[in-house]
Image (cartoon, rainbow, N blue to C red; front, side, top):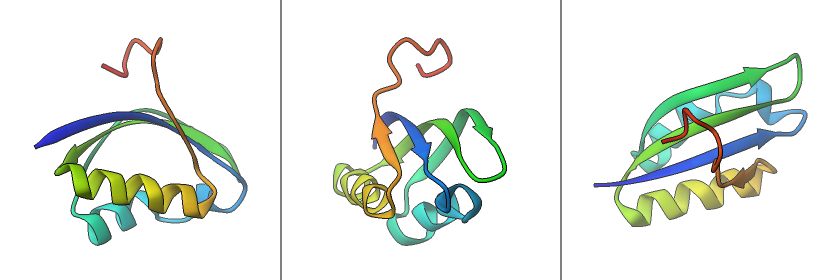
Length: 80
């Protein structure tokens, strides 16, 4: 099992949808939310995803399709 540390930045819309639930259901990855700040319509989250590489790649592609910006959380003390 591999781990992928990411920072997700949600545009208006996906921040209020069950995006993390969909990652678990569709891609069978295990999320560990390390930090998050979700406001009324937007937000960000530092997340550790665990799973097989193929599942992680598919999950990141899905997030990008939704318009969620996926970036490296380097510098975030809770990211590691």
